[in-house]
Amino acid sequence: MKLYNTLTRKKEEFVPLQEGKVSMYVCGPTVYNLIHIGNARPMIVFDTARRYMEYKGYQVNYVSNFTDVDDKIIAKSIEEGIPADQVSARYIEECKKDMEAMNVRPATVHPQATQEIQGMIDMIRTLEEKGYAYNVNGTVYFRTRKFQEYGKLSHKNLDDLRSGNRALQVTGEDQKEDPLDFVLWKPKKEGEPFWHAPWSDGRPGWHIECSEMAKKYLGEEIDIHAGGEDLIFPHHENEIAQSECCNGKPFARYWLHNAFLNIDNRKMSKSLGNFFTVREIGEKYDLQVLRFFMLSAHYRSPLNFSAEIMESSRNALERILTAAERLKELEQSAAGEKLLEGEQEKLQEMKAFREKFEEAMEDDLNTADAISAVFELVKFANTEAVPEGSREFAAALGKELSELCGILGLKTERKTEVLDQEIEEMIRQRQEARKAKDFARADAIRNELLEKGIILEDTREGVKWKRA
Figure 1 (tube, one colour):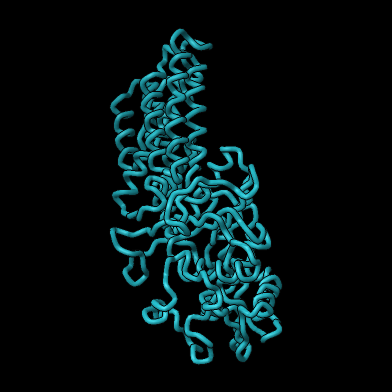
Figure 2 (cartoon, rainbow, N blue to C red; figure 1 turned 60 degrees about the vertical axis):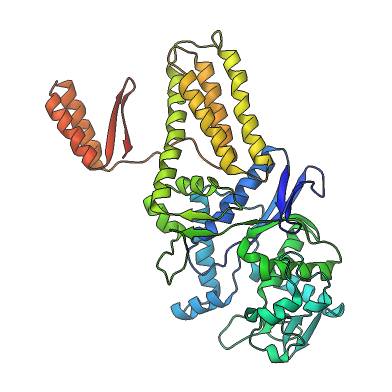
């Protein structure tokens, strides 16, 4: 398998530190609100990477954190007049609900920053003892220039950063040895949560949190570190500096980053009024549609979200679900039981789609091409599986479609949706009208249901329905 490594700027053959095992850390959300669809992209993309690696036989230790102490969480707690830990606990639970709805599997461990403070303090002390950190009035800074390789992930030059990047020059700069030094520990402000530490009562800087959690749950050197491309600098760059200076070894061998998500070709922001939470999208679409949309482009390509593209994704996913449903019906009703003459050869032909699927995923997790292979299988199944064929053949095609979609985290079974009583009653009345041969009444009810967005289909197994 080849992965594009941000560190080296090229595709490299993936070779784990331990044969058959993968250690993977993915930066999770800051939990001060419902997650937005920008948060959803890395969740879906790297969940899919994990699923594929497990399909290939790797044992994956997948760690994704919750940042549950942060300025935004504190601001929310002040706004609502409740403790910060209540804010974060609420939104961790809401995030888990959204992840489940997107079919994102829980991580092996979901560490929370506030539960790992002692490890962060120990890490900062080690950096201080090694001369990489210094304390000024209770604030501890990292000596950026002391780490000779600083900038190797983002490919930025320290001198250029100093002259050109004012964003790094934060408050308190006058007390720092160098404007580019960043905070490892900061003293508390009035009303903020805090922890006791040798330097001051306060809380850790953001970057040290991930360094410590990755180290604790995966080890000093890990296989894969992943996240959105907005984290490359300064977050991931600073993680590398802290971890490598503290542990004396390379931090992560492969760095994977997904590209940005735009809304109607513009950057998502609250000020532009184009900010969507996953929960809001879930009110309009099954979140399997959102997952399909996210995987329909390569993870390193910018992705544009729009109502038109979501409708297109819904229709495309519907083709897969319809094919899977038809195969299930044929598995019950096809003429023959065992494989008929010629069907064994067809099953050999079917293997080509899995080969194409794997080839795409082996090439830097190209989910777009993997989905294309799934649609080739759908077309093949729609053509070759027929009522005159065998149930065994339909079952084999259905199993293949389900397995390939499962690797992508796409479910091939429709959600069983309960209709409200009024619509159930209308369908019952239509059935009664048909039995009484009152076809005008039956057609009138069908049209009335269509206006409500319910499409009826009369089959040998009875009446089926779906939403328009």
